[in-house]
Amino acid sequence: ADQRPLLSSQPQTMDQITKLASSCRVATPHQPVINSECVYTFHTPYTTDKGIVVNLITFVGTIEELALKNESEEEALFVRICKKRVAKSDDGGGDGDDAMDTSTGTSATKLGVGVEGGFQSDLDKYDTISTHSIVLMNKSSGIVVELPYNEDTKNDFPMLVSQSADSVINHAGLAVQQDLKAWELDEEPKPVSKYAEGL
Image 1 (cartoon, one colour):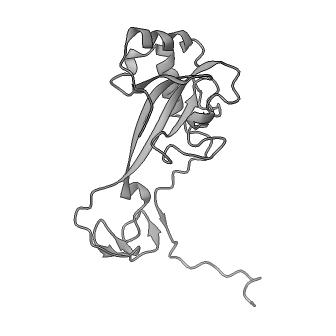
Image 2 (cartoon, rainbow, N blue to C red; image 1 turned 90 degrees about the vertical axis):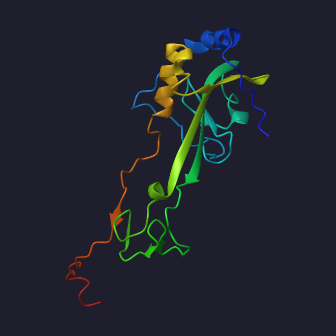
Image 3 (tube, rainbow, N blue to C red; image 1 turned 30 degrees about the vertical axis):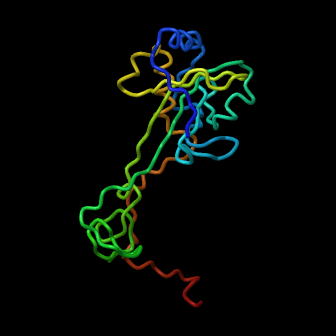
């Protein structure tokens, strides 16, 4: 069972967050933001229901237990990022092996991913459900406050906290982002070089 206290937006709760709002930073696209895995354990937002927490000052993502381990602050604000993959509903696919295109029930006829006649990409197979919350953590007592953060609640937070959280959530992170959504084997023959001709 999840032991995280999700509190309602009470004035006292928001006052605690407001006290730390001035220390939050807004990440620019050129700053390193580690929002895709824990720097110590390599947990990702998909690994557990707790996801990871990203410090809104240092932009370092960790698991909850290690969040304030090396920080000089006694308490800090974090954004919790949790993600879950849910299989898209099957509209009439068949039961088959990996060579079956489950959306149409036909076999792959081309060596390719995300192209017609090829295999489905992961983006075609799964929906990603993301949930976020703002977490106030203390070195001695752990989580002090945790409030859900989404489009409906974002305006309840101080503006700097909202801007900082959005900059972390929407940042590309350290991973090289490839826009490779489709791949297909080239069908034209490769020319034989003069060095490989006699092999």
